[in-house]
Amino acid sequence: MIEPLLNDPKVFKTHVRWAYFSLLTTTLSAILATVLVAQHQLALFYGYLWLGAHLLGMLGITVGFHRLASHKSFSAKRPLTFFILILGCMGFQGPITHWASNHRRHHATSDSAEDLHSPFFNHKQEPNQGMLAKFWYAHVGWIFCAPLANPNRYCRDLLTNPDIQFIDKHYFKWILAGLILPGVIALSFELSVSSFCYGVLSGGLLRIFTVYQGIWLINSWCHLIGKRAFDTRDNSRNSFLWAIPTAGESWHNNHHAYPSSARFGFYWWQIDLGYLFILLFKSLGMVTRIARPAPSWLERKSLRE
Ligand SMILES: [Zn+2]
Ligand SMILES: [Zn+2]
Image 1 (cartoon, rainbow, N blue to C red):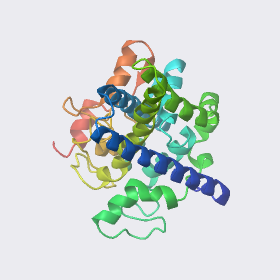
Image 2 (image 1 turned 90 degrees about the vertical axis):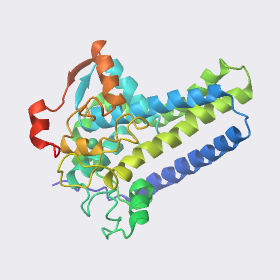
Image 3 (image 1 turned 135 degrees about the vertical axis):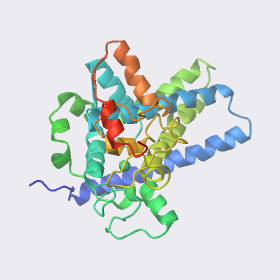
Image 4 (image 1 turned 180 degrees about the horizontal axis):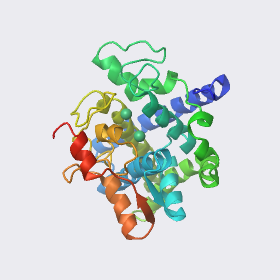
């Protein structure tokens, strides 16, 4: 039996160093952007640039890393696979294999003491006390102390997929491209050094920060606050509030009830931009298979029925 956790102190140390680096730089960038906005120094153009970059960044994680790589809930042609997974890498949340290993372990151990980012247990598998400690640990605290899931145990399929390995191998190049590209786009607004820097700040660093918050809210908020539509064995919740900013990720109780579904928002009113993105590319012939629950399953399992 392959060990479920990586027991390599060197790898863990590198992971923690990168975590500190990315969190510090993006948090400081978010503070700087807020100051610049308060001083009316950033034109509205940079707001739109951030908004577009945030949406694409969220789609990279929810559609690419989560629905496609981790759960294989739909099949895409190669150009779309590369596009959406490279977008995911630009999010600075670790290579695909790393992200999917941690996530598959989350599903295997949801909200038990062995879960890497449950609000209820810390990295020593002791209960977190109080709402604030629970929220903080699941939101961001776990990143610095929880062990890493072993890709050899959870992601053999991804480790033997040459396309995934190619994208992972060049992980840091995608991050760099994700920072430079918005800077280059900003040059079309104004051909100046400051415009390039504001582009990198809004569409690059601030985008990484807000996508972090979006994904982390799924681990914290959506395992503590909100409604349960299905009786799953974890404490997952659905949140209408975060549905649009997280591109549909926040229908998290739905997702735990039916993890292999490419559709997270099960009803028309459960807005799911990630699923709309998949449907758009299906209409263009780039998506060849979509898994989703049958209406009879929804009727049988839903707590509302
Ligand atoms: Zn969850
Ligand atoms: Zn999942």
